[in-house]
Image (cartoon, rainbow, N blue to C red; front, side):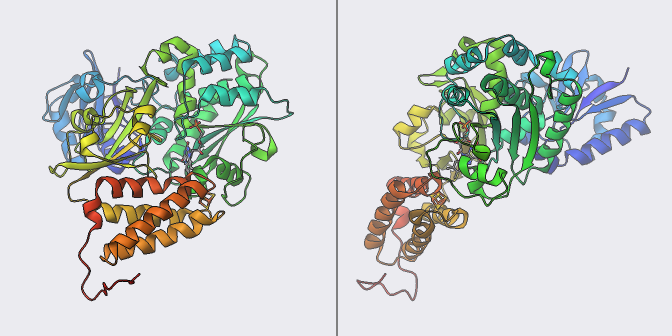
Length: 523
Ligand SMILES: Cc1cc2nc3c(=O)[nH]c(=O)nc-3n(C[C@H](O)[C@H](O)[C@H](O)COP(=O)(O)O)c2cc1C
Ligand code: SF4
């Protein structure tokens, strides 16, 4: 029997050389006349160990990493196929501390199975949720999602069950389930990892959503820059059709659910749900005025669920193990687990799925190992480019929706980007305004014009020009954008700016640049 070797096909691992390593392992095995079956799995999410090569041995699955092409021959010399010791040995995969201390519900199979093999998916508990759902009345499925306490993981944290109930309650000849896989936030990659590592979980979650609300068509709106996820998702969808998990008669239930992947338009604003619907309909991604809510009048004017990848991929767990099980994780009104993405200036970036309540400090130091530069971490930005900057003094804050909003921050899609003490927070504030100016859909004035004025004001502050007046003007502009913008892009851009002003005021007090006039009245 051939030894099974796992080498990820996850885009993150590929960017670190996984494809070359896979080719080298296959070539070396042939040269040595060794039987070997390489399975291209997802990533375990420990990027400091990628490409992580795992071997199925009599003593379980053993890990080696980070492997380069140059290490491959020595791995064979060390008999890694039978678990031989090597300087890259990480021991049993599940015992790696980064993984062992996690509470993986949504990511339980990611990095473990062959992502597009339905038999492997089912052997690891896949499709139990859908089978249970099909035995229930649709209203009971919605009730289970409501009771689980699941809140949208895309950013707004709206209760998923309430959204579903609104769509389920509409009478319509056609309803849709749409998955927001645009994943535009800086430092986030959970959606991608899930779609590349366990795409059938998303397919199953969307199918359950369709059955629950009476929708027969689903669309995944996929970030334009995710070609690997596109390929894997399409392979998984094709397998699901072949095996009767999608199509006219889902698992012989008489219920229909069709699913397609549509590529995004490549703009950050296309992740905002109404822009996403415009884009899905073939138009320019521009925000729609609400009401009506998409749950009532969404895609092509029909009742539509819009949910994030992780929200939908959490549903099979709820329908399999029960709402109470899911709810037993977490704290307060933040129930379940969150796949947290650790990025920026940290030693061990990656994906950490934990119940809500883990602190920023644990994430940054116990998992992240501190900064990659070895310097003190000065701030983190949580929740993407529109998230507030949190200073080191607040790293004891638990990661849950209420605790973060209590310190004026937001959790968003669960991305954490770390910065060491060389970061210039006035430059970061300018970056936030510039990002908004570039990405604005242009529909409303506070965002379209305000962000450009914001960049101009920050340029003056950076040059040390009339600092007091310009900081006051910036604060006023932030209030206008916060209160007057039509959607979260303009409405939340002030968060990074205001938090930088609040916690790092010293960065905004600059000496006038050489040659700059500093006389009063200078603007
Ligand atoms: C500017 C902007 C960008 C957004 N980008 C995304 C995105 O990339 N992915 C996502 O799931 N939600 C994004 N959202 C949130 C969506 O509008 C929406 O709340 C979410 O898709 C609903 O799904 P959920 O309830 O499962 O979170 C964005 C919102 C705004 C304002
Ligand atoms: S806030 Fe910006 S992105 Fe949102 S609708 Fe207004 S112009 Fe468009």
